[in-house]
Image (cartoon, rainbow, N blue to C red):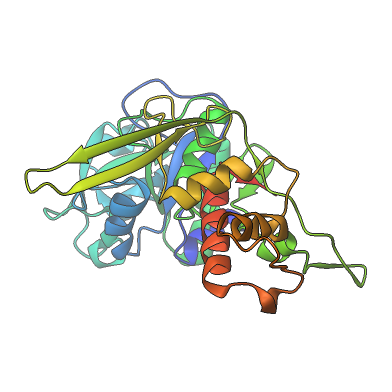
Amino acid sequence: DILVEEISSGGVVAIYNGRSEMGPRALGHRSILADPREKGLVRFINEFVKKRESFRPFAPSCLAEEASEWFDLGDYAAAVDNNVSPFMSLTAQVKKSKREQIPAVTHVDGSSRLQTVTPEAEPFYHKLISAFYKATGVPMVLNTSFNTLKSEPIVESPRNAVRSFLSSMGTIEILVMGDYVIKRKDANVRKLLGEEQKNGLMTQPSFPIRAGAVDYKNTFTVDKDDISETKTFVRMPGRPMHNPKDEWFELVDDLEGQLLGLCDGSVGVNDIMTQFAAMSGDENQQFDKITDYDKVLFENIIRRLIRLNEHTLISW
């Protein structure tokens, strides 16, 4: 029900179900799913979820028993109970009367790379598509392989799946992994600042802490016009979003790097503000109330802590 509600409302979901598959296509065990009725999702998934060319096509996973109502399957279909393409290996023409209903999986020439799904071969996937059919009147979902990191293949392990899901930066709404429904947790600034209430009482401020040991790398370049540029990168193998193929993560600026260094789990925002005041030469400045903070510095610190949290470099 959660998956169907999310897909039918225009959301993008990922599923990690059972053992992985062998072959060139994702067939519902390691898949990103969406609503085939929404044409705009083609560009959204390509550009923002999978970060590739916007014209790449997507395939439908269709209930085998309903496939002949939507696709021209030929005489062979009757002999196999419409299960003509269980491995998404055949291309079929979408019936002209149906093309406007499923634009996200209909190519410019009216064709579609079809997967037919049976309850015997894929009970979970068939049940999911059947529920979507009941809710929308469309017996299929848009299906593409579950991988969001550039140059990486389809996810294999649970760790791969979680990393790929987090790396989508919220463009994938939920990840369903077995009995678990995983959602990306937004940075809780109220908890960080001690403004969150629990049982009617204000909680203590949280202390941000790094996800593990961190290495820093600085690069300094000068272009042909003698314009110099310095960049700071960090490598943190312990963070959930760490990508072994692209280990170095670029920081926004020196402030972000300094904040990451301070996040050892022993200091809060109030302490961090005091330390920056000391570095500026105003050691007697106190920050007991938010209204007394230097607003620009405070906003910059909070913004960078949120970004570090979103990229799983710190937590609180």
